Structures are given as C-alpha cells and as structure tokens.
Image 1 (tube, helix red, strand yellow):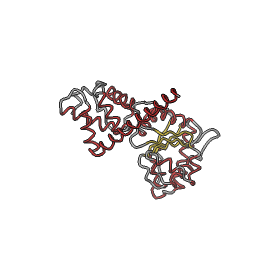
Image 2 (cartoon, helix red, strand yellow):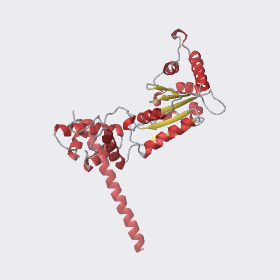
Image 3 (cartoon, one colour):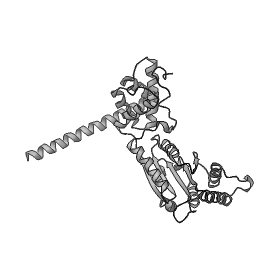
Image 4 (cartoon, helix red, strand yellow):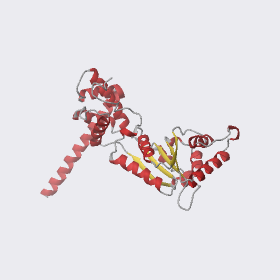
Length: 303
C-alpha cells in the first residue's frame, strides 16, 4: 500500500532472502569470502553460523549466484531427515534416478558416488548446501562425511556447505563428529550489524527499491538499532511496519514516534520496554566507565 506513496518500485523490507538486496557489510563480505575460499580448497566442508535473522541464507543465495557455470548445486532446506531420507534428497537434487523399492543406504551412496565421479570427469564441480544444519542428526552428519571420502589426489569431489545457528558449533564439538570437524576448511560466525551499519543497511535497501534513502530520521534509526539489536530480519519487520504506519498517517518520512509504535506492534510493548531498558543500562555503564577512566587519568596526572 505504501509503495506508490513513497515512490518505491518494490518492497524493500521483505524478509525473503533475496540476494539482490544483500547489504555487503564488512561481516557479510567476510562471510562470503570465507565460503568462497573454502569451496576452492581441498577439504570437504565449509561452515557458516550466526544467530537467527542475521542473513546467513541470503549470503548462501549470493554464494550460489557467484558459483561458476560448471558447478552442479544441491540445496537442502529441511535437514530434519534420517540418513536414508537425506541421501534420497541428495539424489533428487542431483537428478539421480532410483527405484523406491530398492532404496537403501548402500544403493543411494553408490549412485551418488557414481554421479560425483561422472561430474568430475566432465569438469563439473558438485556442491551440497544444507541450511538449518543445526537440526542434522549426528548419524546423518557422519553419512555426509562418508560421501566426501571420494577424492582425487588434489581435492574432494563433493563440497558441503553447512549453514546453521550457533548450536551447530556445539554439535560439531561432539567426540563422534571430530573427524568431520577436522575436515572443515573454512568457518565463519556472522554477527549482527553495528549501529552505523543499520543506517547504511536501511539506505541500501531503499536505494535498491528506487526509493529515497532519507525516509527514516536519525532518531528513528537509533531506536531501530537499539530495538533490533542489528538483526537484519527484525530490522526488515520494523521498517516495513514503520512505512505502513507512516503511510496511514500520511507522513512524508518515518520519525522516532512512528518507529516506537511500529516496534510495539511487531515485538510487543513488554519486549520493547525490556530492550530499551537494556540499552539504557548499557549506555549508563559506558558513561560510568568513561568517568572512572577520566578520574584515573586526572588522578595519575596530579600524582
């Protein structure tokens, strides 16, 4: 409803993982660089972790866009599967035909290994990307490790990208998965955006949608950072609601009051108050430590 009013060609704050809207902060650039580096190395696994909503899936979509044309990619979005179901899904993604009546771990494994060998002979790289990988069972991860055993003298024939929440790091610390953990050639933990990056993020998404980059006041952006904690998905939800509210009020831009109302509607009044109190305490502690540091410096100078 607000797109025409604000001159936008598209919804700039959709929570869909559209790589066209990916804001390449320093951390997102590093995440993409780590994934790309890992896929070019000889190991079998690459890992990207981060809190919910930090943009891991969008980074993986960007990675897929940048893969060379001689790459066959299999993507698994729902990893809550048994080992047999996972191998069947890999076969489906790679276009490997199989008989349902003859489905077995050995049968699926043999077919996948044949496909990997055939791709290698044709100069085709094979990449398996698994999102929400923290839900993988240990026995399923071990089955994935066995798939990466096929290799030449220089590299693995299957590269696996594991994308998940911080629980994935804990999972891979289990003793029975130490062999897999040792095969991870690149890993990166994606942190939320900083205060300055939140403003840049909002301006970037508005620019991609051909809108004015100054639709949000400075005070609104400061509130947005304190409430969202720099999580891109939460930022999108709050900005979308803020634009809707400002449109309903026929405001030319989103100010601090509109953003407060938007955050209360999206997150609830109690959560907003808790996060505001946390932000105030953090600022108070920062000021307190600055005064203490100043006192120590002055005291040392007099001494």
